[in-house]
Amino acid sequence: MISLSVFPSFRRSPFFELLTGTAHQPRPADATVPLKDRFAGKPLLLVMVARERAATLRVSFDRSGNPCLGESRQIVARHPGELGRVLQAEARASGSSWALIVLALGWQAELGLRSARSAPDFRPIDRFLIPAERPELFVSQPRADLAYAVVDHPVLDRSVIFACKRKDLDAVVQEVGSAGLGVAGVRLGVASQVELWLEVAGDKALERDVLVSDGMSVLLLNAKDGDFSAPVQAAAGAGGSPPRQASARPNDVAQDIARFVRDNGMRPLVVIGPAEITSTFPNTTSLQDIDVLRPEEPRLHDSALASLAAEVRHDLKPGLLEERPAIPAKWRPWTIGYFASLIAVVLLTAFFLFRACEEERACATATRRQQEAQCRETAALGALAENAKEKTRACDLRDWVASGYHAQSFLHLILRELPEGVSLDRISAQLEGAGPQLSLEFALLGGEELQIAATRAIEKAVLALNCQVGERHTPAPFSGAGLAYRWRLILPAETGRRKP
Image (cartoon, rainbow, N blue to C red; front, top):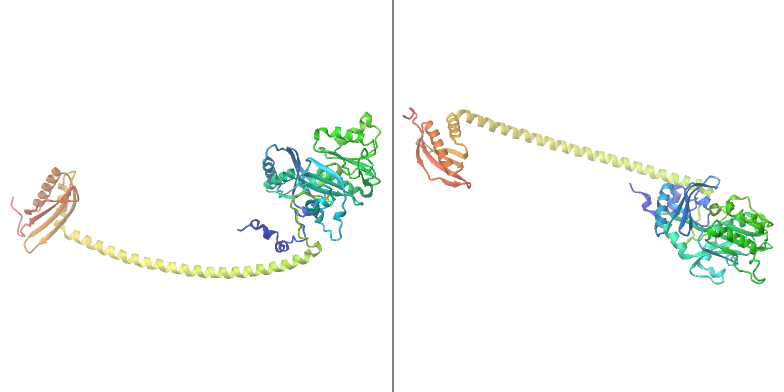
């Protein structure tokens, strides 16, 4: 049986998708579609990566599109390839073929414009392609060694641009690919929390400054009149300065938070992040009077849940391509009905072809069996004829043995008189001429002394039959160690026995 897994291009073809009724479903690699739609009913492995550390989380989506979190696993990967081997085992255990990568690596954040991505011919895929291919449109001095992701202001023409080192990104993507997993997307934990907050809160998202932490890093995003702005301590004309940030510092998160709040002039804050980290700093003596708002949305405070949210769309995955749009779900009954009819026709055709092949095979089998029966009958007739011949030969032999009394006695006497250590190789007798003479030829195998003893024994047997040895020829070598003898015997007269 041929598996369709060996034809990946066929599995991705529109015909295959129409044939299987999945043409209305988005493809898993399509970054323009939320994860809940791409992986409805399919397992997904979330891989959270920090420096020399990683964690996996098994994810599935219910019918409402809400993520359901399963087992998690902590990984310490200090050597190249180690993460890939662990992910391969985890993928087998969870039945996942795709992974979403969430980075907590060293990232950088700065402010920029998004007007370059607001053209009339803007396509959904351009949201990802422009930061990857033309970062100079919104970053003043882009660097080739950095990969960029953009989080837009919900209303204004502003963006927060996140960047991470391309070599770190490529290394993680390669490790995940070596485990046999497809990469559904690459996201930054802090960026996911910021993007989700801006989408959920809408116009009220920037009524006060926003402090975000994923447990590994901290970002302080200042707001002024609902707009992104530079830090308070920056000069008045320093718009576009980077926000306060400290990335990949898990052991110093609490100190970074306290320092950022103090340097921010004790302004009111929206605090987003793990409760065990962000709930401790307001209770210190110097920060008791700060006004803190902690949103009730649980997804905001968990970078894994935030990265799975449908509102989060940024993606750092290398090589993003535009996927074929899915057929609208309303057309599904028509496509399924059409291809159900097509499949029925194909199956009926295959059935009739199968029946025709079966009938042809049955005829061929009957013909072959008839030929085999004829061959067996011919062989049986041949065996009967051979048995008849053997029976005739056996009857002739019995008749000769029964009628040749003297020959039996002669042979019996010779064999009885032969000494041990010598053997009779052959013997023949033939009447010569009209006289009562018999030519006797025989061959003996054995040593010289045994040969003499054997000839004496044979001569004794000849005399016992009232025959005389009239002539002896010189023995000739026969078969190596044997000698061939030829005697001429004088048969007894028919009227009586030889006198002693």
